[in-house]
Length: 111
Image: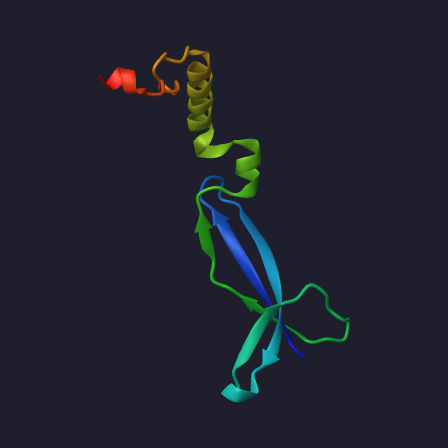
C-alpha cells in the first residue's frame, strides 16, 4: 500500500524563521467509492514501501516554538507586564465578601 507524507511548513511572523513538521498516512483504497482513498495515520514504514510527498501550502503563525520557549520577539514586553500583574494580584489581600461562603438561612432569620 502506498504511503502519503504531508509536509507542513510554517512561517513565524515574530522572528521570520520557518519550521516544518510532517504527518505520515497510509492510503487505503475504498472499493465502494471507485478510486477514492482513505488516509489513516501511520506510525511505521517498511524500507521498501513507496512514499508520496505532498508539500502543503505555507502557513503563517504569530509565534514559533523557538519564540515561545525563549519568550523573544514582539511578545517579550507583554509577557513581562503579565508577570507583573500576576505578582501584584497575588500580593493583594482578598476582600472579605469575595469568595466567602454565605451563612445558611434559618427560619428565625426569615421572621
